[in-house]
Length: 350
Image (cartoon, rainbow, N blue to C red):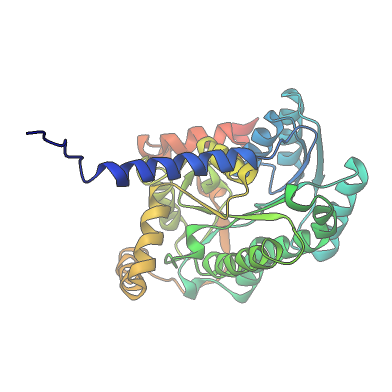
């Protein structure tokens, strides 16, 4: 009597999943963008993630244009990129000003003759209870984080559309555009607006009748960029700096900025719709997706643990709050990142 060998019930599903993963990898490889000779614009490219993105694109042979408001930091970034053999065009300007943003894009097109990739990364972070933020701070957050991206994108769009599907728009949003973290009112509001802008662009440009640029929405969780020294703190600035800097330094809850830059460039080259950076981004996105009201309540509980409002407007930059006594072992990773990424206080950057 012959016996037929029984096959495992999980064999076929496992094979199907493996085939699907292989097909996805092969498909991404087929549409992966060759960056050699391409022109990549990175806003907020003078420091932090923006500078690392400029470096990463440059390593693939791209020509890079960067913009930032701090002329001194921008000059350091330009020299650093040139030392790596990257062809760079750098302009100090405030992209929250429409005329300045449009002039910057026009200048890039004039210098390089084309624009292939636009990375909207410019922005500010204000950390304070909502009662300690004035309308002026909220307007600045919207100008820097949202309107700068609108101005540059709309001005660059004709250049990008000439490249069709080979063009890319990369919008660096934030987990703050999905989950409203307490004491980041202006940042959250501007990033929620940025999320809607980015997804609307993809819907119209990538799925319309004429093939247009591929749009990638980047959703980082906390990153170890060293940006704590260029963030702005209100209310009880020293205490706000304390909790925010610790939250930006814990290894498990944060992602290394250079690793994040590599992931963003990879996603951009493949034209992926979305990329989440770090464990916090994945977990909070998942939690908000399945239980949004519960997530808001949890954020309310977190708010109760943060410094109380002081009732005064105005903010202080993190670099002006930093003192040697604060450079504890808990902030070691952020301090190292600040020095590496051109984010350090002026005395440490010289």
